[in-house]
Every structure is written in structure tokens, then in C-alpha cells.
Length: 347
Image 1 (cartoon, rainbow, N blue to C red):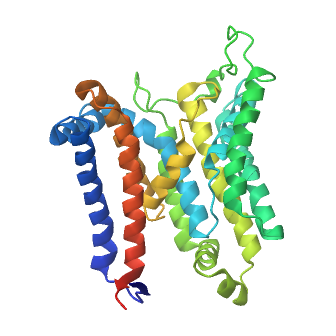
Image 2 (cartoon, rainbow, N blue to C red):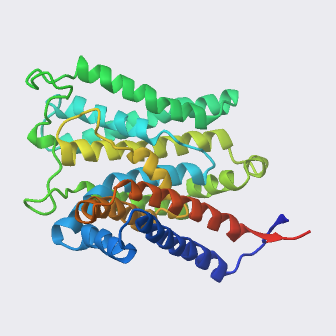
């Protein structure tokens, strides 16, 4: 058996295989629930009910999706240019640190939030800039360097929370001081946790789509991702495009840290992210790296997590099923993407 490239995949193949992957994911979830001793249909119903069954649940799903949209966009932008950014978690924390440094009183006034967002984006961009320069100048694999930066940044944040950024009024807990009022993103719905970081994430998705489809940079990013050698032969400065891609990708991931600190938490802690940077890879792959599709993909993943929490309490099923469900969803989607481009033939 061998894989044979498909020159022009049909629309049915391009749309049908990803849908089949989602169907297989649902079947797998049912089998996992059955193995856990629960009614598969009831378990799936509880997940849906817990994710969107009430106003509170739906808003919590939107809230959980906000950082996933940012990190999903960051990964989609980088992967489209064949820049394997596995360090969105580090860039998220860099953005959060920058937001806290400015939002605890360093600046005040109506421009506080815009300046914090820009500073966060700059911090995240700089974190990714290092691995990309190592890649372009010395050929160092960015998968390794971006992954290692996740651990380096966590250690740095731990040091800051035990030292320079530690809240003197925090009763010894490793957390930063609270952000001032001007540094907090307002709530979309009064009395509930959903904040305007979600609106910012939607705007970011549209802007990334415009960049990728309506600008020269977007064309260059796609060309470099499809074939860097051909792009270089056509006169496209491949290294410069990768650096610009890194700045955009790192900045988007950092906005996740900014929105979590400014919109939800109000201060910085070491457990700010339960893995939003890594989950962003799943979000981007489920969206087939399309920036607008990142939004429903993030909502789907967030709904699974929020619904799984509710399902676990109601049915006594471990929440680890949600993690396994997402892992299978990613595997099935990667296989669907592969089979969209190639066919299996004998011989």
C-alpha cells in the first residue's frame, strides 16, 4: 500500500472527511462513556446540557473559549507559514506578566487597557522571536526551542511571584498584586464572568483572516508554508516572512494572557493557564488552520471542557474523558486532513 497525492481534491472530499472525523469523535466519546459504566447517550446529553443548557453555562463556555481563540489563532498563523510554534503557553504567560507590570498602577487613565494590550503583544512576540532567529540563522528546530520556552517561562513566573511581583498583602500566597480598576476589562453581562476579551478575540479572528486573504503578507505566509524553496526562488524573503509571522503569532498568544488577567482573574498566579497554549494546537487543527473557523472550533473545545465538568458531577464519570475526547478528535482530524490530500492505493 502507498499514498498517492490528489491533485485537485473534490469539495465533497474536503468537507466530508472532516465531518466524518467529528462523527468518529462522537462515536468514540460514546464508547468511552460506556467503558466508564455510564449511559453513552445520557452522558453526551449531559455534556451538551452542561455546556449550553443554561444562560450561565453558555456564558461560561464563551468565557473558556476566549483564551482558546487567541492561542488557536496564534498556532494557525504560525503553522500556515510552516513555523511550528509549540510555545503559545510561554507567550501567554509573557503577555500576562506584561499586563500585570503595567496594570498594577504603573500607568493610569483611559489608555491603560490599550497600552497593556500592546505591551502584552510585544512581550509575547519577543518570546517567539528568539526561537525563530535561531531557526533562520542556525537551523535550530523551533519545535524544541518553543517547547522548552514553556518551561523557562513558568519558572520565570514562579520566581517573579515569589519575589518582585509578590503581593505584600497576599498573606504569603504566590500571586501578584491586584490590577487597578482602569486595567480591568468590563463585563459583557453584568453579574456574570464573561468579559470583553471575548469581543477582542472575535475581532482578532477577523483581522487575521483579512491579513491572510487580503494582504501581501498573507500571500507570502501561505507561499512560504506551501514551499519555502519555491517562495525564495520567486523573490519572497523567507526569513523576513518568518520573523513577521513570529511577531503576529506571539502577539496573539500573549493576548490570551492579557485577557485572562485583565478580564477574569484580576492578578497573576502560576495556575493562570491550565494548558490553553497546548489546547490551542487542537483548536487550530480542528479549524484546519482557518482563522474564522478557529472561533467555532474553540467554542467546541470549550464546550467539551465546561460540559464535562457538569457531566462528571451529574453522572459520576471522570472528567478525564474530556481530555481523551479531544485527543481522539485531534487524531481523527489530522487523519482527515491527510486523506484530503492523498489517497491510499495498493501496489
